[in-house]
Amino acid sequence: MAGSRETRKLAGEDSKRLFTPAGKTKRRPEAIADRMKEYIRSEGLAPGDRLPQELVLIDRFKAAKGTVREAMKALETQGLVFTRSGPGGGAFVAKPSAQHAMELLSTHFFFDQPSLSDIYAIRKILEPEVAALLAGRVTGEQLALLESTIRLYDHPPGDLEEQYRQRVAELDFHSQLAQFCPNPLLGFLSGLMHNLLRELPAARRIYADESAVSREEGLSFQYRLMAALKDGRAEDARRIAAEHMAFAEAYMLARAEAIAGATTAD
Image (cartoon, rainbow, N blue to C red):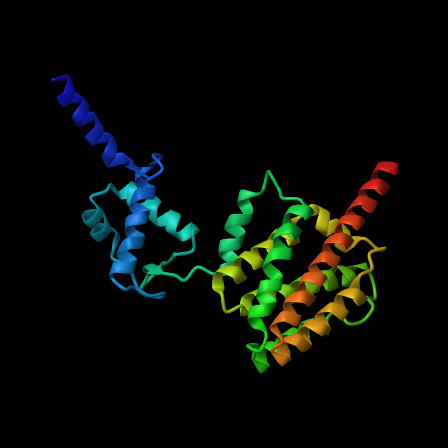
């Protein structure tokens, strides 16, 4: 009898939680959300396609209304589903954007932010490879976009506000390269580093620092990189990007130390 009761207990628990391969458990709504993802894949649904009505989902997944709604909310937070009210409304498949995914991942570091050294340790590995892969593959339209970004900071700033915008635009140049990268995972990870850097308080202080000057050196690297990309010189592109990242790391760390020292002195 004890074994029977234990079996029934485990069966009841299994209806609420599913075990992952690592031995951890998932809440019932999370498990239903995973099954909804599999449903979207198996049915070949594409962004913009309508999902079945709530009652159909409840019956299909044998779940309570509240559980299905919580699962749908989780998918909406992940950017995989969106809802529309009114006539013709309902739940629809969405295509999660890279930016949305990066913002979700950035939240992971909200209370334990990486350091400048942490970020540049990764940038020094990823960005030379992005540059090498792009050599000879950038289109005329992509080159025009990169050049228009450079024009935002190819001149001295008129004030601190413009200087800040210019520093962010310099980072945008690298984010555009990441977006163009033919290896989507490499490009995404590189872009994630840029996103973390934009949100890092230490980096923001450097961008707003009136004594910060590295625009000319950064421009030199970027112009040389653009030439290598146009000419299809992959090894040169890798080397230039590596030199640029090493220079940027040294500059950012030095400025962070100087700003921290000035703050302590005050």
